[in-house]
Amino acid sequence: MKSLANPDSPQPSPRQIRRFVGLAIAFAVLYGVWAAALGFRIVICQQAVRQHLWFALRERPRGAFPDDQSALTVATQWVAELNAVYHTNPCAPGPAFRLLRSGAGARWTGPACTVVVGVRHHHVVVHAYDTQGYRMDDAFQRLHPPPRRL
Amino acid sequence: MLPYPDINPVGFHIGPLPIHWYGLLEIISFFIGTLWLIRRGRRPYWGWGKEQVFDLEFYLAIGAIAGGRIGYVLWYDLPYYAGHPVQILKVWDGGMSFHGGLIGVILGCWAYARQHGRSTMATLDFVAPAAPIGLGLGRLANFINDQLFGRVSHLPWAIIFPAGGPQPRQPSQIYEFLLEGVLLLLILGLYSRKPRPAGAVGSLFVLGYGLFRFAVEYTRQPDIQLGFVMGPLDMGQILSIPMILLGPILLWWAYRGGFETPSSAVNAPPAQPRPGSGPSLRGKHK
Image 1 (tube, rainbow over the protein chains, first blue to last red):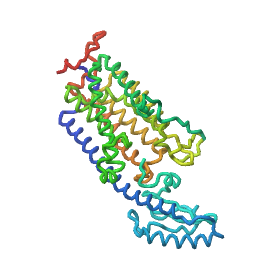
Image 2: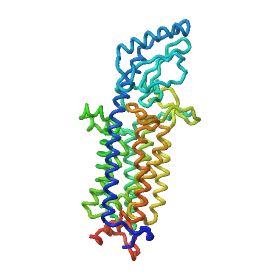
Image 3: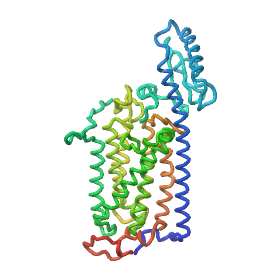
Image 4: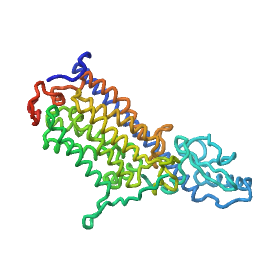
């Protein structure tokens, strides 16, 4: 039977074929195990942030305050209360809730896995940053509270 | 911004039984894929009879469902399923992984080939071009089912998906349909029109799917329980990286003849093709 392989390159020996297939399978298996371990860790961490965000969104002080300063005072006290309820952050060093003093529109440069409380237009606002430090979609999270899965 | 075409996920009823578009599209893709494989199998250099295609599809279906589910459990939500193992069996509750399904299909081809005296790689080459039919229609089903939508976007063709909240989102299911379905089908269909070295078509599928999936994931909303898993990459991209890495290596190996075994020669044209010879060549290589 005619071979369709490139006639210019020598066909691998049976030993080389076995070694190639073995290496490919080993790579796939090890990579799969690593991905499963990564996914396991991330789901646990993400679940914690989602829980914190959900709690914060539900308990957030609502309504407009007279000015940003008074809103910030309320937010500061509220962050302390939140950290008393959830006193550990399972996926990042430091507290689970942090205050953003420079305004909620400012870019968060702190640790990942954190719920950030800030002030905007005299309101207390809440944002969460996922295990990789990316801002989470608050509206989407509010729509699908933990432990909802998609 | 485009309106979401509010298609009822239930296509029609057969008596009291609701027939969902999702299931219907899967059945349609299975039907089209089967017809296409039977037609392809008649070509002398493939040498697959109708019965053999049906046999193979049984192995593929088991592999795809079991692999898809196990892959989802392992890679997408292991802590939950470790605590609720019975839920693993509830496939109808959703949660399948393409990458797990791919491994399941490879194992299915291996089991079939082993039992029927064929080459695993030649079997994979035979089925690979039909896979985008199921993948593409599956993505359309995701769109109809208002699931696996894209990230928030303000592009003119962004859509407000009811399950995604009030913000417009990328219709990433449609991108996936076009790339993993239509374009990949075209590429593999054209490439496999001529006889290729054993393993080449399957390897091209691995590379093509990996590239398309990796690219589209940049527009897709990551799974809510995971988010991003490594920097800006989500789990779909993490699992596509080995496909992108291994695809070209497997192609190179195929062109070196590394996957050619005596039984894989069914993938090659016979030395003296007989006009009108459609029956299986399997017996010739036993």
